[in-house]
Length: 116
Image (cartoon, rainbow, N blue to C red; front, side, top):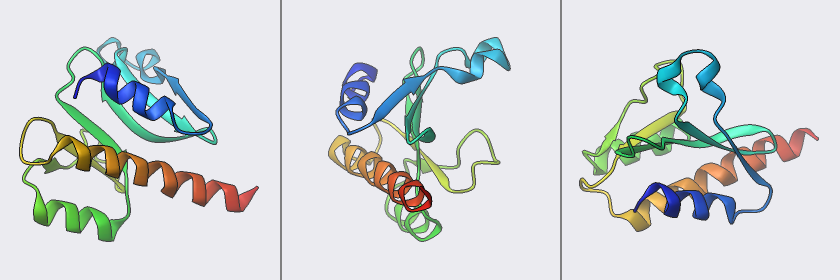
């Protein structure tokens, strides 16, 4: 998997947009690409250093993911408590990364569709 493949995958989902919103906080975050559905983040990755993908999940699913894969780690921003980071090219197959990104999309879409 590379950043363009992840980008194409995310943008193929209904209503997804992309932004690089964190550069205004610090230059080192300018290359963080974030994917949104209903104006809420569900997935992000660094375009320049594409070694991991972070995405939204549930506490139960995070626990399960971490118990099965050593590639699963805590996101760099500790405040993202319902997020998991996957180090790429380790023990999680790309197809599972894509499945979990799709699940992240569903979690956010379901949560914010109900509120509208």
